[in-house]
Length: 545
Image 1 (cartoon, rainbow, N blue to C red):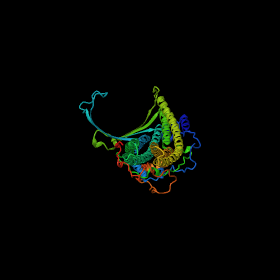
Image 2 (image 1 turned 120 degrees about the horizontal axis):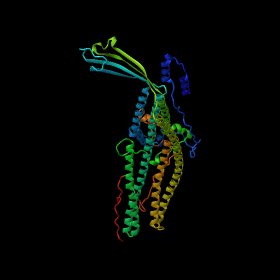
Image 3 (image 1 turned 45 degrees about the horizontal axis):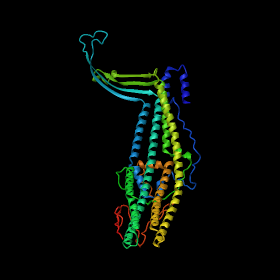
Image 4 (image 1 turned 135 degrees about the vertical axis):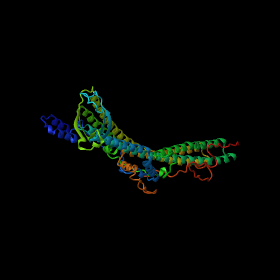
C-alpha cells in the first residue's frame, strides 16, 4: 500500500518547484519503502502430541530444575549462569549487534563534520589568463573553518530497510543468548545427574568388591580346613577381582564428569559437591502443552524467525539501489587570507545544494544483489520450517523416551528385587549342600548387574525429563537470562530434603552380596577407600590341601 501511494505521487505532473523540497523531505521522513513488507510464515502443526502424559502438570514455564529438590544442583546452575563463557560470548555478540544497529540507524539523520585548514600558497604566473602585475607577491595565506553537512534523503527506504534488518539481527542475537541459556541449564542438570549415576554405580561396585573380599577370607579359612576345594576358592577370587576391576573405570569417569561440569561453570577442572543421592531426587510430571505454543516458547524458533525478518528487509534495501540517491549538502564557515579577519562579517561563507546520483548501467550488479537477498530469504524461511520440525520431533522423542524408560525402570526394579531373593535362596541352599557354589556366583553376578542397570535407568529417566524441559523451552528462560545478567543473583531457596514429592523412583540401599557364612557385617565403603583385608588386584594365596 505504501509503495502504491508513493508511485501515485511520483506520477503526478506540474508539481510546483517551491514545494519540491517539502515533497522530498516528506518522503524521506516517512514515505516510501520499496521491497516486500514482512509477513509471518504460516506453519501447520498438529493439535496435540502423541505421547503426552494426561496426569502431567504444566511446570515448564517455572524454574524446572528446582523440582528435583537438590540444593546443590540449584547452586551449580546459578554459578553456571553467572560464569559460563558461552553465555558471555553470547552477551558480547548482542553488544556487537547493538553497535551495528546504532551505526545503521545513524544514516537516517544528517551527518555533520568540522574542518579547519591553514595554508601558505605560491601562485603560478601561468595559472592566470592575464599576466600578473609586476611586484605582486605570489605568496599568500589561506585560512578556513567550516561545518559540513550531508543528509541522504531516504526516499526509497533503503536505510530504513537496512535498519529493519539490523534490528532483526539484534533480536536474533538476543534469542540466541536465550538458546545458549537453555542449552547450558540442561547440560548442567544432565551432567550432574550423570555424575550421580556414576556415584551410585561406584558405590555398588565398592560394596560388592568389599563383600566379596570378606567372602574370600572365609573361603581361605575353609580351604585350609579342607572344607572346600581349590576350585571353589579360585572361583570366589575371580568374582572379587571382577568387582574390583569395575572400580577404576568408574572413578576415572567420575573425575572426567566433574571436569566437564567445572568447564560448564566457567572454572578450572576440579571436584564437584553433591547434594541428594540419585534415588532421592524428585521426579515431577510435566505437561507438554500444545504444539503451537512451541512457536513462542523456543528461543531457536524465535531466532530463526528474526533471521527471516532480516533477510526480507535486505531485499528492500537491494531493490532501492535501482532508484536515484538524493542528498542535501551544505557548508557553513569562515575563510580569509588573514587570521585577524576570520570572524568578521565579510569572512563568512555558505553553500547549499542537492546531490543526485542515478544508476545508469551496472552490468547486472544491482539485479545480482536483489537475487542474492531473495535467495537468503528463502534459505531463512526453509531453515525456520526445519527448526520447527526439529523442535516438534525433540518434544515427541523426549515424551516417548520418558514414558518407556519409566516402564523399563519398573521392570528393572522388579528384577533387582527378584535378584536379591535369588541370591538369598542360593546362599541358603549352598550352605545346606543342595547346590554348587557356581550357582551362588551366578546369583551374585546377577544382582550386581541388576543394581548397576537400575542406577543407569534411574538416571536415564531424569535425563529424558531434562531433555523434555529443554525441548519445550518456556518462559523460565527469560528469568534465567535475568540471572545471567546479574539482575537476580540468587535462586529461590529450595525445599529441604524430606519435603513432599510427586514421585520417588528410588529404592532402599541394597544389602548386595553378604559373605556366604559368618556374621560379618556389610562394611561402610566410601568412594576412593581401599577394600578391607584384600586390596583390588592383590592375588589370594592358595594353599594346597
